Image (tube, rainbow, N blue to C red; front, side, top):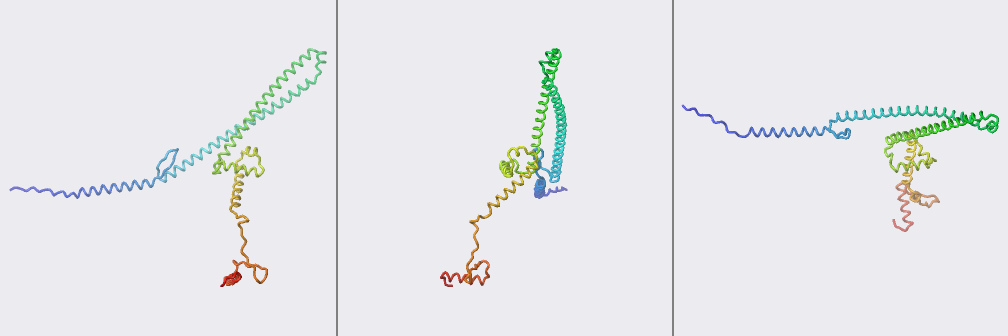
Length: 283
């Protein structure tokens, strides 16, 4: 007996359709996830480069960057303080050396003055050998005096250079502080305005050039802003020609005047009718 082989069911294609729908759903979910991830990321600038980070990481990175910046600022301030301390010590040493050298210079000048007051002709005639020794002594003192004067000159030059360097450093520190405190600092308009405000307050040009304390500039900036605000108010206020007095009408009862704006409704109507009648208009 011959067994009939079962024929496999025809492929209707439904399975493929289900797979395709799953693939499409998967692509959509993946796209939505990527979009959601992109929305969750934020741009952040770190050391000159742009990165996309989650908001939490961005805030943490910014806090770290702010901490690093403040740490660097503190380290720079400490370094500046140490430099200033060393410069102050060197200035004290230079000042002490100047005082010692100057005292020695005065001593040499006093001894030279004594030798200059000697009657050299008499000494030479009476004791030529002593005169020769005094001449040698005078020359030695004069040479030592000139050497001391040269050292004093170098010390003065060094102190002046240190003073100028300190002024420059103070100006640089003031510039940094003023840029942080005054947003428009550095603009020509502001500098010109500060100069005008200072000059109107009695400052001279040399006084402004020698200001190294930023606190004085901040006070001057406040005065400048006040003057600027007053000028704006003066421009906005109406002039005397633009101000018109309130309309007043003489009443028939006396020399008093009536301000129609202050009349009640009934009185205003009566006043208006009377005015029109006087003008020959029928009411």
